[in-house]
Image (tube, rainbow, N blue to C red; front, top):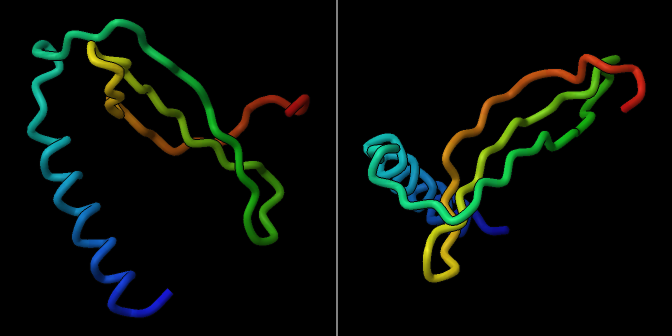
Length: 78
């Protein structure tokens, strides 16, 4: 990707982040919630990283990220 493309994408993500931070959770009319942990392993770390995410399915088939929090896998099975 070019530097211009990365800069454009970052600005879009910043705008989405600002909008997300102003969101009133009580105003969300969710049809369903999807809650999951996404695993990743990077570099030489011994522990797998995990990103916990909550996504709401709204009326009209729109999806909205409600929360995302980094963490670590606490199980040896995964």
